[in-house]
Length: 245
Image (cartoon, rainbow, N blue to C red; front, top):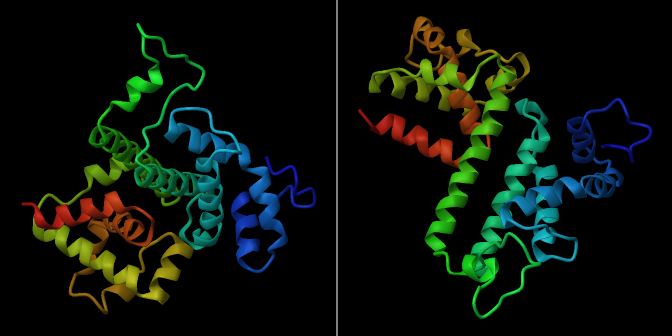
C-alpha cells in the first residue's frame, strides 16, 4: 500500500511513522493520502454505510489517523494500523454521539407509505442500544490490538487468562509491580527493548521476591502493556482485578 514511498519500499509503516515523528513532515501528507482507503473502511464499519470523502465522518477519521501518527510509539512494540484503527473508530463514535446520529446501512432505499425505509427503522433504535453495541465493538477492537501486541512478547491472550493469579493479594502485587515498571522510564525502555521484565532491577525497588515476579511474568508483562497503551476498557478490567475477591 505504500506505493507513494518509492524510495522507501523496504520500510514498514511503523518506520515511516517514526520518520514523521522525527521531523520528516513531508511524509505525513503522503501517508494520509495512501491510507485513505483504510480510513474509509474503518469509518464505514462504524457508520454501517459506505463513507465518501465528502462525509463529515470521513474528515473525523482523517483527523484521527493524523492524530494516531503523532501518538503512536514504536518503542512499545505494537503495530501501527491496529492502533490507528482503534483511534479512528473511537473518534467517529464520539462524533456520532455528539451529533445524536444513528448509523444507517444503506442510503439507496426509498421509503413508501406501506414500507418505511431501513434508514427510518434504524433511526428508531434507542441511543442506549446503539452505544451498547458500539462499546462492544470498541472492546473487541481493543482486545484485538492488545492480542497483537502480546505476540511481540511471545504471549497469547489465552496465556494471560490462564496465568492470572487466582488470589487477590497475588493479583494486587503483580499489578503493583507492573505499575512501578510502567512509571520508571529507564526500566520501561529496557523492557520495551528486550521484551523481558528487568527482574533484578525491579527487586531493588519493590517488596516482591524474584521468584514471585518470575512466576507471574506473563501477567506482569500484560498489565504493563495495558498501563502504557491506549486500552481504557482493559484498564477498567485491571481495577476490577484488584478489587474483586
